[in-house]
Picture 1: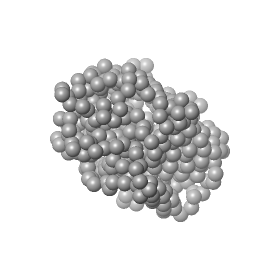
Picture 2: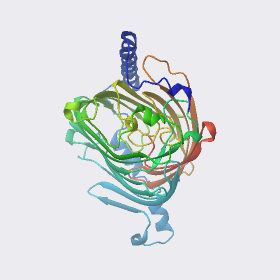
Picture 3: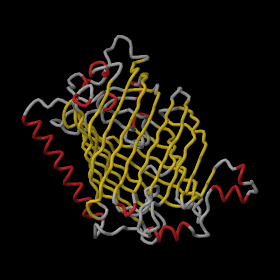
Length: 430
């Protein structure tokens, strides 16, 4: 294993200097966030794309999706492999699929996506609910349910992230120098219950509180390298762990369509406090700073440049190994296209991605993206980020629902050390 792991002391700040650097890095991150929000728009009170403009675009007779294609081919609507239902202005998409990703192998998937408005207002934001059922070649069961709901007048934003996983998979150790050959099997069951309610502070700015609960059980290494004490064991391998605590969040979002953003910006700070008094196995704290920006390029075209910065820090204490910052373990499992989930894991992670989206067909049925990303890790705040890890690739977009602009995303990504594979998503990656 890499020698960097031998001296790793995860989550420990052993001097006043390291504590100072911890605070300094966090303040820098907040400064970048505020600068990002300020530059994202000339006015906090303005929504970049009004929903009325989006509705006009979506209802255009020139737009086509998969349902239109099947109808053109003469299939009766009752026999479609994709279901699109409009009821009370809600758009519902149901997509059965067979796919392949690095972390699941071959998998069968049934994904659902609902997009709706909570009021008839040209300036209202889209609310979304997504869910899926996945069973994979590696006997993995994945059941996520996520909701992003705006109440009337956008007074409150209700965010839910519920998930169950039975997850035979791989881990690669700690640090930023792991190789594909370092991977070995682990197995665990996981329940994630994250619920937050944010209240409007100003136009497009929200703040609030949430409760986060993560349960891990039946945790085991299934085929660790013989004669080796793994990083998992060095860090602390327990058959069950629990993380329970509050999450404080500040959010800026002036996007009109969260499913497929073409303009606007998103910025979020989350600070999570887990404590033994609330039932956690250990007390620890972490923060996530998530920044996204979208703009047309060239101006006036339907092409979009999308930028994403995802920063995940352990501020104090020692999170469970499986809840440490790690590639592919963001809320939607979307960071690090080109790498298998969990390939890199450490106390702190910073991630950048740029994607260019454009149509292959004038009617919007097929599109394409090219993307590149960079990730970097540090083991303690007192140590520098010492390596940039690149990735990239391209993908196909198939219009599933022209009214909500939902795409089926099929991407091929590649990275270092021969890492490569397919990644499938219902809705844009970010």
